[in-house]
Image (cartoon, rainbow, N blue to C red; front, side, top):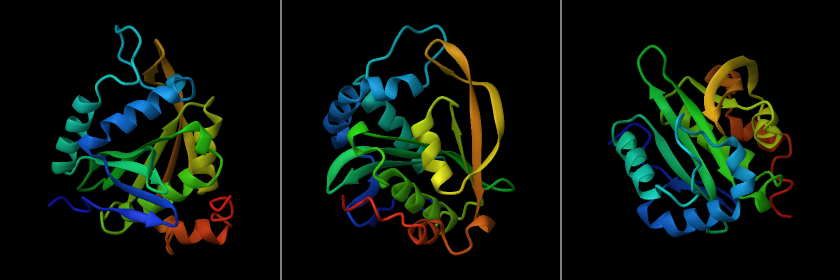
Length: 205
């Protein structure tokens, strides 16, 4: 069994659990319904044309599940009141002297701004720093992606700088802002700090 995987985490109406093959229909429908919301921030491959929100789920989840078995990624589905709502991926897990990982996340537009994603991400980060035994997590976000930046800023991630021309998106290499957090910065846990700041306030609305 991989360190820290599989695992299901929950708080109130929010659950993060391993992505499953049978999530494919809900994943496709959610991606298609939120295409305009998500597409500007999606990584692309140089030399390819466009992308389809329903394309490649099976191949993608197979790849992520294979990485999970190797201890290289934790691919989570995000559910709210039992309904599929988005995805959080802990990727590029490095052990040894680094003990670090990258975070990627998205949520349906209608659920954004309600404290759901910060709460879910706090659950995941606490798991990374606890059972998964990681030391550092990092999120790289386009400067223009204000909604995604607000998530990590609410949680107290440090802005470390700009990675120039870091990831290929929408036909060009785009700059990204690098945010990070280490276990020493949240000795009582990130969820505890988030809740102390009133993180639950919007969940009941």
